[in-house]
Image (cartoon, rainbow, N blue to C red; front, side, top):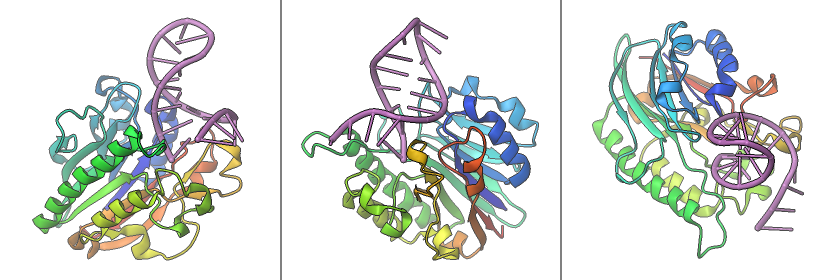
Length: 264
DNA sequence: ATGACAGTTGAAAACTGA
């Protein structure tokens, strides 16, 4: 089973590129972030024509996540538990039934958190850290289930210096601050496996290049889109990769897809 | 401690992203 994550940066602007990628990469499951659309306006017919079931959790203008799946989806759940007052659409999960086993799949769009200054007033960064704490609680429950499960999406976290072409440039950024990386490591170290690092220790594995300053042309990228596997899912990992060529096409998202293949 | 891009909204610039 091939599962991919892709921050598309707006479904209205990205539908042609998304359809082209779905046709050629043909993931069984695609987790989308930043659909920037309410559920009613999501172009589900065009995607269903390619053989996908579509489940969205959208909102107007910003955020929004979705699951596309060629296999049936069961027990769909929207919104990250832990704060009923949180109205931002950043989390969706569902169970996919494979040939040999089921897999719980969680799609996430973790808050950016900038600006992270000044230290005494940084509501967006505080929201990011609080969101990661709620995510940690959900992650603990996934591990406790001892089942095949994964959490994939735009984590907005640069885990290590080698995950950025110019790490010093990100030193004071919410994506790379020590607090952010420590909170991410706490989740990882519960027992999850970073699928990309399970399969490669290479440098320059990036999933995002800024639209500005010719970042793509200079390969000034960062790795912030991640697929984290439970031990049970990691045992079934057969491959992982990043579809970086999409960034060089017309009207690209600033993110590219990251994918895994699992023997389920 | 900024701006450059790009997308969305709504009809011009403001807001958001990373």
